[in-house]
Image (cartoon, rainbow, N blue to C red):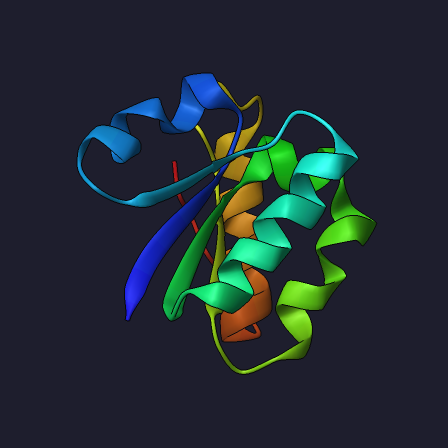
Length: 102
C-alpha cells in the first residue's frame, strides 16, 4: 500500500520529491482525475490538505464513504486558523472539549 497527499502545489510539492503519490488540486476536474488514479493504485492513507478540503468539501465525500484509504485532513503551513482546526478535529475524535493546545 502507498501513501498519497492531496492539495495545492505549494503545500505538497516537497512530498512528491520524497516519492509520496501527490495530487495537485486547483479545480474540480483535478479531483476527478485524482479519484480515478486512487482507484488504480493501492493507496492506504490519503493526507488531504485542509485548505483544499475546505475549498471543495462536497467533492471529497467519496473518500469518507469507504474503509480504505484512511483519510486525514491536515492543516498546511499556509492555513489560517490551523490550531482551531486541529483542536476541533481532536475534540470530535475524542468526544470532549477539554483540549488545550495553547
